[in-house]
Amino acid sequence: MRQVTSQHDAQPDRIGPFTIARAVPNDAMQFVGPIMLLDHMPPKDIAPGEIPDPD
View 1 (cartoon, rainbow, N blue to C red):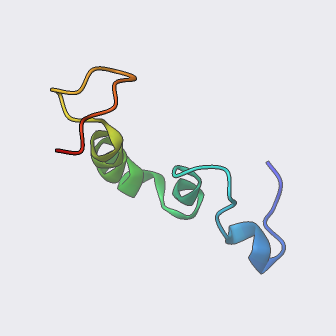
View 2 (cartoon, helix red, strand yellow; view 1 turned 180 degrees about the horizontal axis):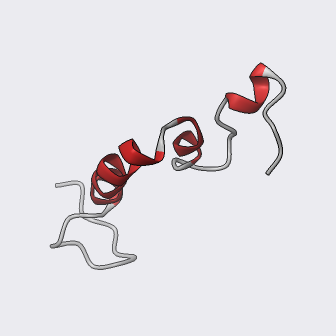
View 3 (cartoon, rainbow, N blue to C red; view 1 turned 30 degrees about the horizontal axis):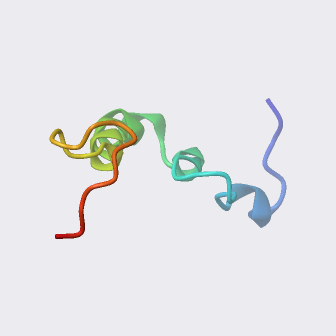
């Protein structure tokens, strides 16, 4: 484990929606993690890879 030595290391990188978790305590992630995963899931009536009609 390397030590965080600069303020930049604590900032989330631009590699995805889950990088912010590095700045959140593990106890909080156990609660927020599942909510974030559910929030990114598509609605049940849309098949994977299917583009819904704009109507």
